[in-house]
Amino acid sequence: KQEVTQIPAALSVPEGENLVLNCSFTDSAIYNLQWFRQDPGKGLTSLLLIQSSQREQTSGRLNASLDKSSGRSTLYIAASQPGDSATYLCAAWRSGNTPLVFGKGTRLSVIA
Amino acid sequence: DTAVSQTPKYLVTQMGNDKSIKCEQNLGHDTMYWYKQDSKKFLKIMFSYNNKELIINETVPNRFSPKSPDKAHLNLHINSLELGDSAVYFCASSQEGGAEEQYFGPGTRLTVT
Image: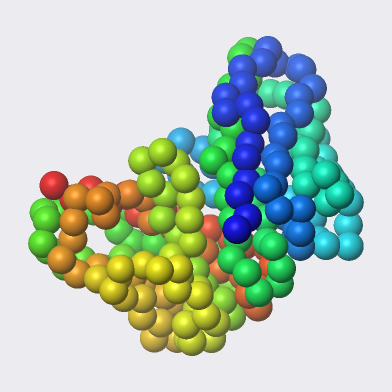
């Protein structure tokens, strides 16, 4: 059974810092992986999807990488801004026919 | 032009009541999902429907009954509500299902008193 762990659970950084959020899996048999952002009281916003044949994806200041051999993914946020404050969730599929399994998220606060 | 919408946003009800949550997506996707986010913010799949057919049912009590009148709608009906049903319920959709990018609705916060 796939379990997803996100470390740290919470992170507070000053504005402008580059930061890395970590995600690890108990089962390294990862198919695709998706990173989300959740603002308080809101739904999930899809940030990046890394497909099984890819190792990373970039969108603006965000870069997500996936290392299947170690069962880890990282989300890199460059030049953080107060508007980046949210909970970031990673989720993975073990195969094309299994449900999406979520981590508990990292709550990020970017202080102006 | 909301992609995935849910109604209501908030739902407060008493134990034993029956309630429904509606979900609609205008993305033209074939697959829709219901997720439950508990008080510890842990998000877990409940159901998945592809083109009105049930694909995933993750050992959810049979008091929960999803209904898909067409592929753009997936409603969640809950009978005999219990205190433990209090949570935020999210609807989501993806193009064809499988391991494709999922798009989420804003959530429905259900409080059972």
